[in-house]
Length: 197
Image (cartoon, rainbow, N blue to C red):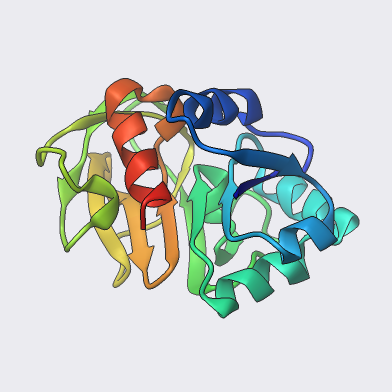
């Protein structure tokens, strides 16, 4: 069973539709005790870093999510769900992330339009199980104003104003800055790769 974490926002319906299309059994929950029993977790994210972290704390979801990650259960964070894996974000300096990775999520600054919105290419920088079966330079759909700089766990990057993490992978922890649930056949393959780990 795949468990989608519902903290009160996010592209839940789109993620559900993607899993249904893949014929996967799933559940949606905001209950800590259900998260604690999950075999694998998907954390969709849309909106504001601070609001997400406050909602997760209010619902008591922080501890069971961290426990599942530390136990080795596969975890996929989408968009802000990737960003919350870090210590903090310039979007909400007072908010503390899950701190699986050190560092702060940055705001795009430069002459191009912000948010970074639309289809853009993925450039592999390391072995990437989520992109297995997809060509380098494959396009995915992005919608974000904040980004994770390229770092040790970056498996694929995207360049918009500057290179940043598009796919993160370390052990059982995965994240995609793009919206896999809105990226057509590419997104379906990414989700299938995660679900068959």
